[in-house]
Length: 150
Ligand SMILES: O=C(CO)COP(=O)(O)O
Image (cartoon, rainbow, N blue to C red):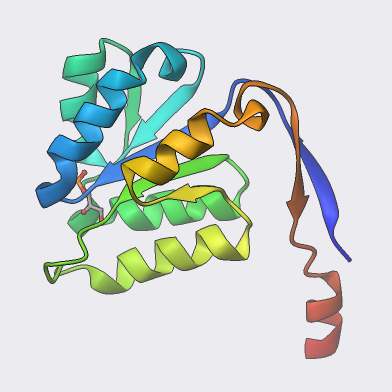
């Protein structure tokens, strides 16, 4: 049975991009600069530095992805500290920290976090009326799962 978690209008948004897609994320973020100012932003190290310089909005920067930034974001998702994930991962190049990337994407699904991996999906997310208002997110309830384990 699902439970619901009310996510307030100002959301905690994580922004991450691999090197080959940083320009794409930057372009998207600049186009959505006004909307982003309504939210609290988090990012992996290098992505955060680039975005902060162009958006003029404070961004809480975690470690760089290959040094543990993806895992830090994964932990924040599990602690219900991230509401939305914008992750422009690179589908055409191998990454040294591939297990961390998979783990982060997996946790987004486990915790039912809206996840945009391209600008088209990010546009849909940001033009959704749910984005600018209160949103009752269906939250995964692990009670039954845990009771089956013991
Ligand atoms: O590697 C990343 C995500 O997997 C992104 O890390 P940076 O933002 O530090 O480049």
